Image (tube, rainbow, N blue to C red):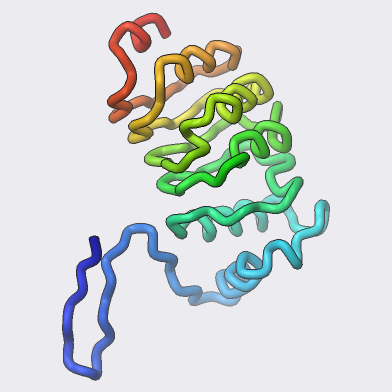
Length: 176
């Protein structure tokens, strides 16, 4: 799982993990890192700009476990990318209620966790995000035929990316 390379004491041990967070190098990145570390304390609805909330979410998605996000964090967001994250229970429902009709693009590429398996979170997402135009589900190996069928309620959905969804049957894909 981890690749460690031994070097003389002057060099650091490296860990090759694709989800490892990058070290902040600019002042903006350091501010985002500090806010993300104390998100529940410093987040108040309407205080953090939409752009800053998007930057914080990008930073948090480098972690293998996505932390619990405060209420109203997704309000007004048009694009969300959770690619590679392990989704916490209730996250899709939170996205559905807060981003709802404003959400146009959702990236769940290679996501895992209990939330992806739960039907009610996925159903809420499909029912409330009626303006969703694109959803990326590539590599979500637990996506079922019934979850794919739920996406019919997204009236404006034009692009659905499904590569690597091994549980889906050919019949479900052709009927979609």
